[in-house]
Length: 416
Image (cartoon, rainbow, N blue to C red; front, side, top):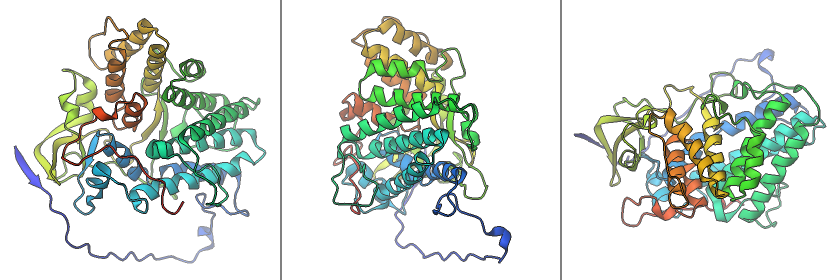
């Protein structure tokens, strides 16, 4: 097999971007990502929050995927992706920790304004986005917690992981109440990523889907089952139905930062080799998500010939949560309550779609392994693997490829 070896870049040439602006009153419009007291309407706040959730999504997902050993990011120009992320410690002043933190807290500021707008629908959406932003922060910082005071007072202690989970739950439950206040439509528009979830009642189903995810991560299985019953879970429905981050060339938008053509001469985002080693023969989730390249990409004593094919283009969406995950979350909740036959039935739904034979004999002895396998291959590159392994206390099972490698936890940024 031919091998391409990437060498670290010795020098990075400075690049100067020159922006040309044409004076025209028609171009003088408020930036929804940076609303002021004068320009902040409900629509700009909602649009800004959605856009903010896409900012640095590439950095966030690469962080999660590399630490969770779903991927390598073999970037010779920045060996922190194969150093800090795979050995530690992560620099609290570096971009890998700071940029996702800053992006999510900027969203939270918009959401606080939405919650105080006096519009019940905006409040419900704002609290849901706020909770989702905190979920992403905690997926990186884990036991290091997060900041729950938003007034800039850095003398206030960082909240613990359990306190952040409590805040997430309260936000989702309060937002759900707002969304059920009786309004039949929103006074604002959401992006196409929320098609089918763009009214208070249908957005509430998305809210409950996130609530179920949080409950499962805390082993609160009865709450998870209740939330799933009010979500958009559909055991006979389209597994891809759900809510997505969407991308475009429109003003204040961006492309999908994760996309790379799998057949390009050199690519950076590669699938961890364990993904092929652990796949069941005939699993369509593998063959639809990964291609084997004829060249092996090698850098920093890491190598892979597996390229992701999750996205076909620069503007393909990235899931926030899909029906397939809900079916598997319900299976986890059934396992947590000892209902192994129901858990097996749920897992067999996704296995049938993946071209695999049904499970039989699911029990306490094998249920956890089975649901982790199904989630690993069904939710590939969706950012859930690391959190699942933490939830079950199994991060020690994630592969360490070199002496000195470790499963890192992100620090609180030093500016905090």
